[in-house]
Image 1 (cartoon, one colour):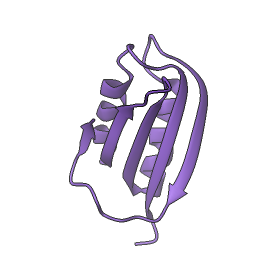
Image 2 (cartoon, one colour):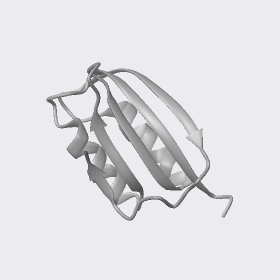
Image 3 (tube, helix red, strand yellow):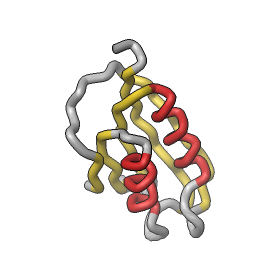
Image 4 (cartoon, helix red, strand yellow):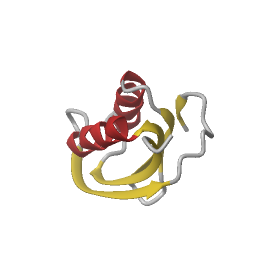
Length: 92
């Protein structure tokens, strides 16, 4: 159980209107993660993901790279305790 984790990630830059949420959902699903991704009013994108720590770390790397038309300037990562709250990974 100690390998299971939860993370909240905020991604800043040109990350809205460039397919970032669809990209993030695809990467999360490919890595077997659950959670959500959503746009925030300040122009950033927030992702919350649960799963195995090593899969989450790879997901964070995916978010740092972003999709083709995105320009990621900053990524803030906050690790949390695993809750088992989600059943899938959704765009909100």
